[in-house]
Image 1: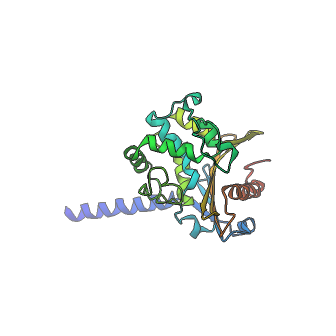
Image 2: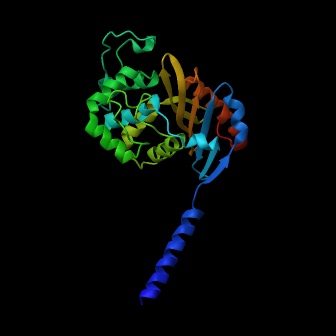
Image 3: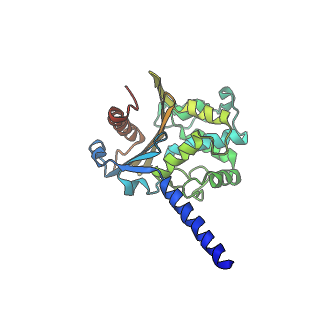
Amino acid sequence: MGRWILVLLIGVLVGFSFTATANAAELVKKDELEKYFGGVTTGTFVMYDEDNDQYIVFNEPQSVKRLSPCSTFKIYNSLIGLETGVLDQEDVYTLVQWDGTQYPFPAWKHDQTLASATQDSVVWYFKKLASRIGSERMQAYLNKLDYGNRDISGGLATFWLRSSLQISAREQVDLLHRLYSGKLPFSAKNVEIVKRNITLSEDNGVRLMGKTGSGLQDGKYLLGWFVGCVEKQGHRYFFATNIQASDDATGGKAREITKLVLKDLSEQRDLIDH
């Protein structure tokens, strides 16, 4: 009897392994996208095509390398703030007063709501937000999300800014897919608020949502991110780009590279038409 149970168990495991393999998403490497990454030391682009269960990847080794998320973490900082009640769902009640500290960016030098702070990537606002959330709740949510290495030891107001927290481009894409699919511990209303705040354009039935991130050290931008989603006629494409260089590797540059890549892919996949 024991022998037959063992045979049956092996059969179940083999069947499970085959099913898991059969259902694995396809990965398509696009080496030709390198032409868009001129002027950077290294970079990667990852896109997940939800309908076709397919990843498009440039520079696969870099796509799984964990790096500081920089300001792309504001997506989840916002969601955690909303979900814990630290932030109100009505934007007008998320107002935080500017304390007069001088910054190199004019947009940072006034009072901010969640919407304005997201759109202008106002670091001081999100530092205050993280402090109000607190270490215990922040860590608990990162554990629930399985966010990268989940390490906030670099300081509650700085852990995502070229510090202890790290995540790969592939993980960014998978996390966004889970977020938009309702598989993360956030209410649908809170997710919609954040999606609205990161919407960059909405033309001809195409909605581009994204968040940049820039890693600054000793006055030089060493790391740039752009992550987000394209929605078109019910279809969704999740993407993440990061770039590294000795300087000028900014989120803005990563965003422009991403737009060029998406335009290129649109000619093959009808992703975007502008």
